[in-house]
Amino acid sequence: MSSPFSVSREDVAARDAADPLAPFRDRFDLPSDLYMDGNSLGPVSDDAERTLDRVVGEWRDRGIEGWTDGEQPWWEYAEYLGERLAPYVGADADEVVVANSTTVNIHTLIGTFLDRVADVPARELDAPDTVEDAVDASGNVVVANELDFPTDHYAIRAQFRQRGLDPDEHLRLVESRDGRTIELADIAEAMDDDVGILFMPTALYRSGQLFDVEALTELAHDHGALAGFDAAHTVGAVPHEFAAADVDFAVWCSYKYLNAGPGSIAGLYVNERYHGLAPALPGWWGNEKESQFDLELAYRPAESAGAWQIGTVPMLSAAPLEGSLDLLDEAGIERVREKSLALTDLLATLVEDLADAGYEYAVGTPRDGARRGGHVAVEHPDADRVSQALRERGVVVDYRPPNVVRICPAPLYVGFENVFAVAEQLRDVIESGDHEAFAASEGVS
Ligand SMILES: Cc1ncc(COP(=O)(O)O)c(C=O)c1O
Ligand SMILES: Nc1c(O)cccc1C(=O)C[C@H](N)C(=O)O
Image (cartoon, rainbow, N blue to C red; front, side):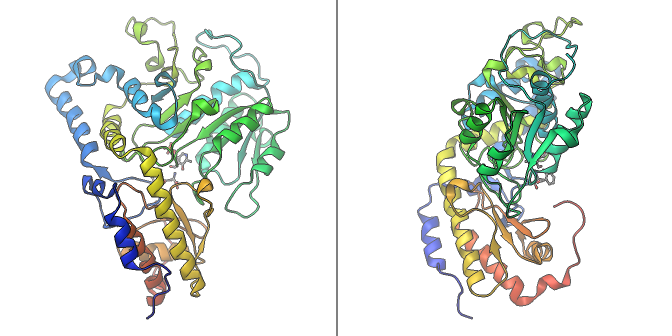
């Protein structure tokens, strides 16, 4: 069979040989040689295991003393990890903290800002704001988009309901023209004077379209609205400059490109001008550190992003992130992004070669690198069964309904030859008809 590909295996092998990030692959334990999960769950690294083991050891040897005497005292571990994450989102250390899950962080941040921008009865806050007139925006509408990951909408809708606002009226969804992407012009169209918050992903979970955070923030501000982002699909893969772009708030998870493990602690960013606002979901872990253990019934939120923490930092789901960040610091986010673009470009090219050769594959991700996150949506009419057949062959991918095989060549542990091998498998599954033996999938992937 002649090769349908415009690139040869020798070409890609040469690229691996010249790749400065190639050695990082050995720092990971990969469940499969072709671990291309896209990206729902990054794999474990030696570094993440090391810091997790260290904390478990501190728990064993020191017990409760770990709160103050841990190598990184657990007491301030969420702030410490916030400081470590700050360069990845382009923010000051006190604008970032790890806390909760992404969904919970959407609840508390959307709730906090809705209280200030929407026309709702003044809420009796458990603590007075210590910053006045910080929120220069108003409006009863949140603009999001119809291709969002659903949890974002569940949380926003619930926050509307809790304020007596009908979510069907107040959550405005920008529609997609092609089912894959969202156009800036259509977002601009939705930005009437009634919008208080524009809440967008930095990259769409299905197609991988990357948004221009700076342009969206400017758009929101020009319309008297705040700009918030769900950066779950980009932190650790794409560099961000949230403070320079004047983003108001953002959330993200650490189990995708940050490789901190299933359900690992999430991150949040709150622009420093809002430090001193009382959060919508208060808890004692968001109290200012100095008085937290006075255990007074009066709640005093920290004057930092730390205020949006709720309960005790979950040390065992935070500790792997420290090691992951050690590894990522070493690799360098600029090099990670550069290689990611090269890998996703190669994958898209090979998929287009297959399409040219008559296979029913299509690339559902923007080809312009500036509009592409870290994964590629490979579309196929039988994507569900093709994904299952790929997994059976050891190629770990995600299926995302209705027609996407989501493939993530993550630069820290995937090489150019790996991408070539995946493209060959995409071809071979169809050639063999292996996918036809599978039924429609059920459950998580
Ligand atoms: C954009 C986005 N936000 C949030 C989540 C999930 O949030 P949580 O970590 O709270 O389950 C996901 C996927 O897991 C996602 O893709
Ligand atoms: N986040 C996930 C999880 O905790 C378990 C299983 C799957 C997932 C996901 O990847 C959902 C997701 N955010 C997505 O991008 O499709």
